[in-house]
Amino acid sequence: MSVERAGETVPETVVEEIRELPKRFQPGSRSAVMPALDLVQEELGYLTPAAMSQVAEALEIDPGYVEGVASFYSLFHLEPVGKHHFYVCNNLSCQLRGAEEILTHLKDAIGVGEYGEISQDGLFSCEPVECLGACEYAPVLRYHHRFHYDLTDAAVDKLIAAARGKRRDGKD
Amino acid sequence: MAKTELRGSHGPAPDHVLTRWIGIENLARIGVYEKQGGYRSWKKAMTELEPAELTNEVKISGLRGRGGAGFPTGIKWGFLPPPDGGPRFVVVNADESEPGTAKDRYLMENNPHQLVEGILIACRAVSAQQAWIYIRGEYDLQHLAVQAAIDEARAAGYIGEKPYGVDFPVDIQLFRGHGAYICGEETALLESLEGKRAQPRSRPPFPAVKGAWGRPTLLNNVETLSTLPWIIEKGGAEYAKFGTEKSHGTRLFTVSGDVRKPGNYEMELGRPFRDLIEGMAGGARPGRKIKAWWPGGSSAPVLTGDLLDTPSDLEALAAAGSMGGSGGVIVADDTRCVVRMAYRLMQFYARESCGKCTPCRVGGNWAVRTYERVLSGHGTADDLALFDRVQSGLAAGRCLCGLGDAAGWVIQWTMARFREEYEEHCLRNECSVEGGGRAQPLPSTAASGDLPPPEGRKLAHA
Ligand SMILES: Cc1cc2nc3c(=O)[nH]c(=O)nc-3n(C[C@H](O)[C@H](O)[C@H](O)COP(=O)(O)O)c2cc1C
Ligand code: SF4
Ligand code: FES
Image 1 (cartoon, rainbow over the protein chains, first blue to last red):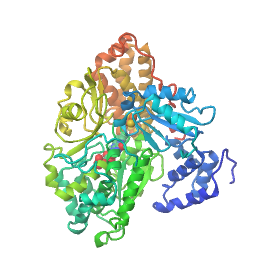
Image 2: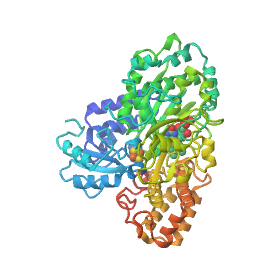
Image 3: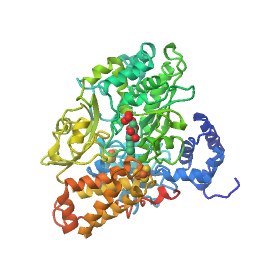
Image 4: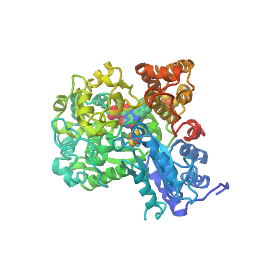
């Protein structure tokens, strides 16, 4: 790569996968950018500048464009997150059923003061998010690509305890 | 998919169009779906009816879009120009991010083949050979369920080169969203599908003429499309028997918040909300009274608890001073402070503004800061005036898309309908709802503190 950019890069196998993505879309379109960023985030946990440059190069577009897209969407992380990241719904239906309390409990339980902060052991982080579209099960959180419903403090504690033996992809 | 308790309509009932088969074990598997009669409408669409006849049935049905705007579906289909040999698309709005709305999720995870069949029918009607389902990124399991249904339908030959021997190659693919409410707005959705930042386009041209990748595109919501197999099976006239004169059919409402049995309930349009909220959803918690409710997602103007007898058709809702919106019914009881709820919704709109129009970008943040001041016990009469000013700046088409209107309505209608609560907070720094006495400290997600500033990351690269 011509310009030195900070952070980890993804292995060549992932770059290969990224090069294949545009075939799914209209010729000449940029639709592959988000699926490509997904692959990077799955691999590294967040989008490093260096990896975004890899995406840009593989898709033959400007790195600034890639970052512009990445920064628009809240599911892309431009900063590191914990190995286990909790997205806790805090929109109205969940708030009416105790989402604030869940968030406070979760922060305490994983030992962070702020949303986005990573726990000292590098394992956990969390953020409040807008309506997750599962309001009949409020309060709700999303964690490792799954929803968890009818949250209680005890249910949150259980998730955290179980997580201590898991890898980044959530598998045991 | 993990077994979770079904909270909502399922099984046969006179007004179960969308949910009649939900609850049948393994309905997501094609064999089970076919056994109920699934894909018969697709066969009929391919072998018995012309594309124009499909559109006509849908016109007769009177079906109106369930995504939010309530536009007549058959008429929308008619807006696509005649085929010119180039690509045409059906784009499915499965972004479902309107607060309080979960019905598309319910349909996708419980009956994915019904959606696939509906999409195929729409493709045939408008002569589009490629469909894209834009599904919000958080719907991981639902994504897999729909993908599995597509794969099964492909293996069965329903999707592919020659469904039923007819020369109509058709394909469906999924595209994952990444956490931006604005992607539910149809032109922002198209921008996102094209790999861009999701900022709404100005119209005209409308998507029907110039949509995905500049080509004619039909955009419909998941629930709208899921209704089609029933309509093609039984006929548009049969569907039109449900509902009122102008709002035909049934609708899947999500009821959430302060009710005993939250869920997704299908109900004939025109039946009063009392049947839904007090009947199906079990009504208020013990000893509580319903004080405020949003009948169509948080973007629909709030209504007061004495209006539960309002009929659920779009016209009656408009007459009551709100709208049908997304069908997400959020219920709040008399333990809730309206100013605080408005604050939470305002944070949402400020945070999700795409930043393209000044009133929306700036006004939202102004309003959030004003709510913060008022809720922390520093409100004044000036703040009442400020709310009014911000609200009128957002109203009346000053913004490019509906998000700006919705943000303005939060202030406008909570203030109009719960004026005394605003006056308490602004003029006397009191809240008679939560514990009486002084205003409460700020909730932990104050926009100025823990949340990223609404304009921050999203606009960093504008
Ligand atoms: C801010 C905003 C958010 C929207 N979100 C959604 C959504 O999540 N899902 C949806 O189907 N329609 C949504 N809509 C409505 C769409 O723009 C569009 O009208 C609809 O998808 C058309 O499908 P229908 O005719 O089948 O209803 C939204 C509109 C606005 C202005
Ligand atoms: S009204 Fe708001 S969300 Fe809609 S286009 Fe304008 S700035 Fe973007
Ligand atoms: S408000 Fe939390 S899932 Fe909808």
